[in-house]
Length: 424
Image (cartoon, rainbow, N blue to C red; front, side, top):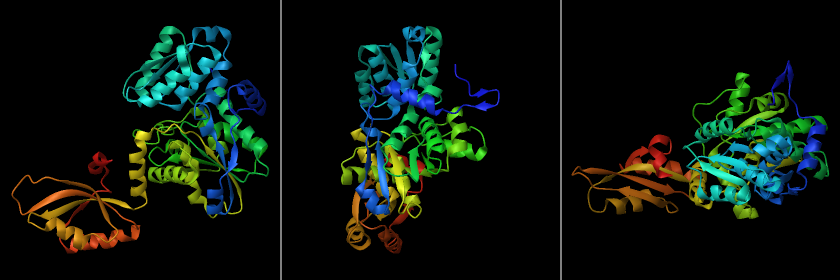
């Protein structure tokens, strides 16, 4: 078992260990492109390059760490088999590695995992992997996996808090430095448990120390940012799980120690902003990315002035995005951009009230996209939940003023997540 501390020495992935990892995984892991994005280069007046880990065979970088870890295990442990817990990309990476290495693997996934992800994991693992659906959350699956591990003597493959996993993810940095034709000023990378950034930042600090390393977390799951502020690993009680590839309650202890030393800045990005980036990448560049995969690009707007004229790399970490989520992604993007608003509208219970609302309250470019009303009493007024999509966020204030002037205004719902949750 790896230990975080050897007396007072904090683990740091060495250049030699990462080079060995690169050699170990080279036959099965793709050397993904480092391609300039003309869309974002033009938008930010910089050279913005995308490290396309979404093009890996398992559609995320997770195969690097999983394969490096499993392939480095002694034969006696490989014969016993491996086990992991995951709701997505790590599961697929472990399954792929087990199939290639002919190692038996057990993968615990929450019972709530989308069918598409379960089927992909089973497909990549083939006859070498058994998928067990257990519990409602990752934590439930993790606890069940640990019991199974202890009972059967299997080796647990951690998704991020493991030295060989970190070294596997660090191979991305070696590729970027080899592929870049000029010194890199900024690297933007997503962070969940921290394995990717721990590895990548370590290599850049050794080989390109002037490069600024920016970590990005979802606004609803700021585990690393909270821990850095506290000076120790903090477990969050509640997190927003929408960005499923980067939403964890607790970062890895090794990763925290490394990131604390290496990161130039740790920021959070709103989930709605991430959704808008997903839509932009699809519409403008025909790229399909998952929420975690869009995080690095989403952060560029917050650095627009700093990156002008600079060489910038964004790590696109994955593309395992279920198409059934697109309606929610669009909704969140519209809400973030101020183009979608929900109200409780109070309608007088008389003929012509709705017609008056449409004619006198709605603007010429406003569109009703949701309307829920039921007359359940004989009062003079009846409430309805109404969703309105605008063409311009500046139309919001005049809309509210007209609603109040005509006595239709009841309550604004966008700021009330508990009441609003059922609408998404």
